[in-house]
Length: 334
Ligand SMILES: C[S@@+](CC[C@H](N)C(=O)[O-])C[C@H]1O[C@@H](n2cnc3c(N)ncnc32)[C@H](O)[C@@H]1O
Image 1: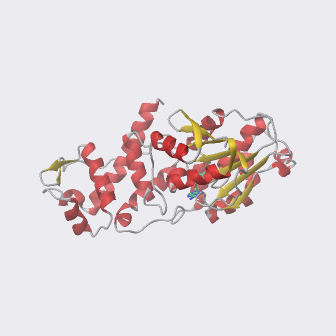
Image 2: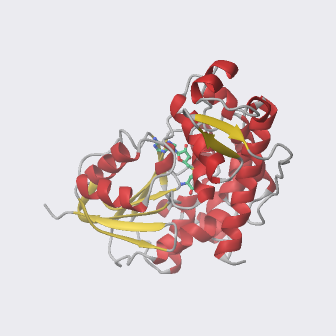
């Protein structure tokens, strides 16, 4: 499937959920006459004006509502019906996860957050994080880095169930870069995910290394990644510890500036930071980003330009991007 079709599918999906959730709330009946953001806040007992404005901007850009004089908004097409179609790249579980976050939006507008795994069966995330959707993006980010065949320390920040760490381990193994002196850590704040990463380590590794017989893989246990609990906002490692720091689909779930500063702190001078992260540029990422903000601590998507600026401010250099979702940069030498 072409990139454009794919993005269009995501867009239809996220817009369908947004439309359906707001319709159920009664937004479009209420907007049959012109209303201001304050009217909407009062009517539905909302407490988050920034998010209301974000939603109104999205609905205007989608021609669902229009602006009227004196900061008003009014619905254009009241017959419009929500259509929610699962994108081909989404597994059923991933589809359900994002539907759940989208449906939590009214609650968020009233000031209540969701925890990342709250209300979710972590098994759903386990399935989603092993899906081709994530795998293809992670593989692209590994290919963007020139790993040197010498001992190194690598940290995967926000390693989840350990899928990203295992896939990276496999990539390095295939390139014969893993050695006794290679040290790989995964850092993850969520207990449910960390439990899977630690207790199903070999299972997750085998999922990404199924060409290696399980018994052979078990013999390599000394070289397996280690996992530690902790947040990107306070990385429990000393300054200048890692040659490589990887992060996949994590920065939008936290405060990205603080996380980048911490990531750079633990990276050695001239060390490489690389990762995968969708950026805020296309309409679908705006709605996706909005849904992400129901999660406690999440700031949502940002632009490539912002990432480049924050990386430089925190002591990074040589920021580069490949494919719509892959980035890398290095830490300054001094
Ligand atoms: C979409 S998952 C990606 C997991 C993994 N990197 C992968 O590609 O399979 C996002 C992960 O970021 C973690 N996360 C959220 N906030 C974080 C923070 N402040 N520090 C570190 N990890 C965080 C979540 O708990 C979750 O495991």
